[in-house]
Length: 115
Image (cartoon, rainbow, N blue to C red):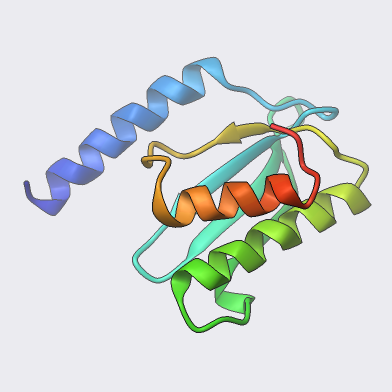
């Protein structure tokens, strides 16, 4: 399977999820984007079309991508608590819930974010 086909399939999966999932001010959407080198996460209020907070693994300390994902998950949870957000809707962006995506989500849950 070539890269173009993979991208098309992921986009279709993400569109299916986005048709059902929306964030509000009280329960924003935790959106994930994964590239080959980093993971970017955002807390988004879809009603106001506003990004509440964002975190990237590019700024995190750690040797491996997995370690940086865990650090980013804990940081997004801390930032969310500072902004007064306790519960979120998780949008995995069409990616499978394994590896770094799962590590990120588990770290955010461990820090107290509910989803």
